[in-house]
Image (cartoon, rainbow, N blue to C red; front, side, top):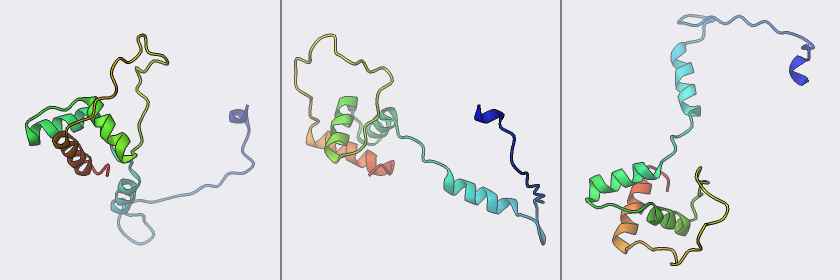
Length: 114
C-alpha cells in the first residue's frame, strides 16, 4: 500500500546540461557513472576459454571450483543445483594437477578475481 501514498511535499529542480556557467557537463556524469558500474561477473566459461587459449589445455569446472574453494573465494549457487543428489558421490572431489591449478590462478588474476 506504500506505493499509493501521496508525497508530503515536492521539490522541483531544473538542471541544464552542456558547457558553460550553471550547466552540468555531460562528460563528468559519464565518468562518475562508469565508476559506479559493477564489474562483470567472471564465468567459468570465460576462465576455461582463457586457459585453453593461453596454455593449450582444457580444465574442468570442478577444478576451477576446487581452486576457488582453496583460495576462500565466494561460490555462487548454481541455477541448476538440486537439494539432494540422486546418487551419492562415489569418488571424493577431484583435485587439479599443480600445472592446472597454477593456470586457474593465473586466469583468476587476469580477470582480477584475486
